[in-house]
Image (cartoon, rainbow, N blue to C red):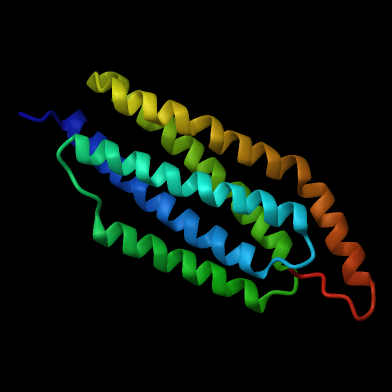
Length: 170
């Protein structure tokens, strides 16, 4: 018999899987368009690989618990990421907006994994707790990296934006 806590844990793992699917799409679209910010592009590409691995790890937890990922949640998350990715084409400061969005998204992921750790601990699911504790520092590292470089990204954007015949937005 499954407890309500275990049902919630499984549902939240499905949410986390959809979140990672959304992150992968969002980051991929951003990286594809970045031309003038090579350090940011490289770090995003690194995090895309981390994100793919995280999605697989979360999927493993879901399957181990006898569940499967939610096609609806995954599809919705991917559509949201596509819309966000396309919105960058219509703003003049795409790199700044993408940096802000990525920073905020990383913090949502951090909060989600902290909640999953607490739920897994209460449910006695040591493996899910271990997996989430392994993912959490990667999300924190990406958020910290973005925070540390945001002022430089903004300043580089502003300098490029003031230079005639120079693309600043991406």
